[in-house]
Length: 295
Image (cartoon, rainbow, N blue to C red):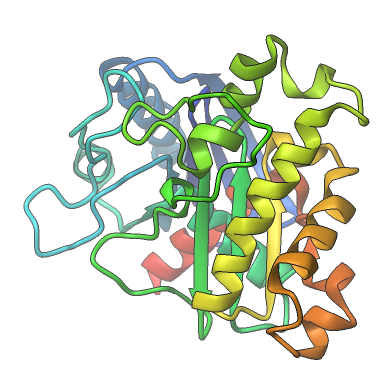
């Protein structure tokens, strides 16, 4: 049976695992995200130890972004300039490939999550899905015809500009754009605006009206630009499940009847959904990347 190494490099933690299939995780380790000088050797040590005992077929990596995906560039497989301290321009694929000598699949963490949901979760049997993660940052994985959307690098939907809610005086938390989607609606923005973490705010707090408004604007933009068959909303902030009906209502109100698709008008509860794989979406998406790299 083929064994694969899978890696999620997240904003706060790294997850590495040895996986034979979606329901067959052989080993797993987690450690805090610190610096590439510390984390990359940790990843290599874990994978190399298993590779020495039972050879791995390939490795799949879902990475926080932005990342370099153009294989024609010498810095392919690196992190691009990012808000994450210490990680700008850090190579990820090259040192892992050099240490193990096996194929490495590499993509954005949220694109990996989208592939996981497409293969085994809320996007199964579909071809066109978008997965938004709303947590430490905000990103979107866009899958068209079963493949990540081909483009110059990858979508950076977390930095789209929105109409500010008239009641919201928070200046924004993005170091690049201040009040973009991520700067207004990611977990750190919620905490900085209200002085407490998102999960500690009561369900009737006005924070959730702002959040539903901003996320609905992003979803409306996505519907109009990409027209996916389903939109999946994951990440820590979206664990507040009372947000889903608020977002759906806001999307319908903002579209204002312009899109007449049955999926939007009559079946929006099945159109905007949480991830079926929960917090395993990223890991299983990295497994898809590993399998595709091997193929």
